[in-house]
Length: 256
Image 1 (cartoon, rainbow, N blue to C red):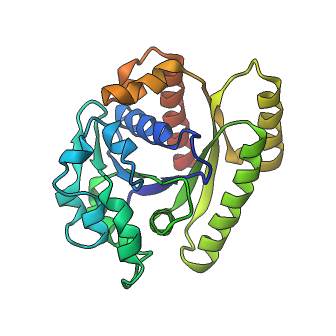
Image 2: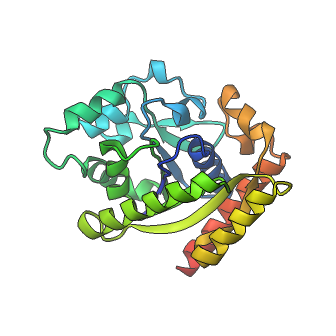
């Protein structure tokens, strides 16, 4: 049975997709079989994996509406060494169509059951809102990895997300838990970021990953080349940090 993790934060622009792709590539480099599920209609995780979202014959949209299986709709990110269940603008329509359907919040979980023997990890890139798509991700997952910037407003958004996770845990998915908080786009020269980082560690303790992802231009450039930063420039500080994060996550899973 694979470990299924949502990469989620209700605040936009905090590096969810960057985290998803680089963690996937990092885990693949460490010998893990990984599937990335793109649940965002913008399809950034799809394009960032070198897959043209406009040319997808089948996508996560077809899977959620049960018109195709995961095995039929997945494609390969050759550079990153992982599989992608891609998304495009069609997925925005799924929000409306799912409302009237049975098991509307369990569709992704049911679909993933058919490929459980194919993967060690499934990473779900969620949109930056509590939508029916995000709810599908949370209902399918064992846990949530929260990428966050060490800024004041990020702390406010974090409390909202934790409350959401508690509600889903209580009502829809008893397995769901916060796996950990990942500090991203970190600049140690900024006093506020160091202060918020210390607040996080004081409040959440060992739920805060030891690895810190620094602000890094090469990570930001990589998606335009259709590659995770870990592959695009393995020597960059950000890339090396994500490989270290993948290693830390594996170690945590072995202890769990």
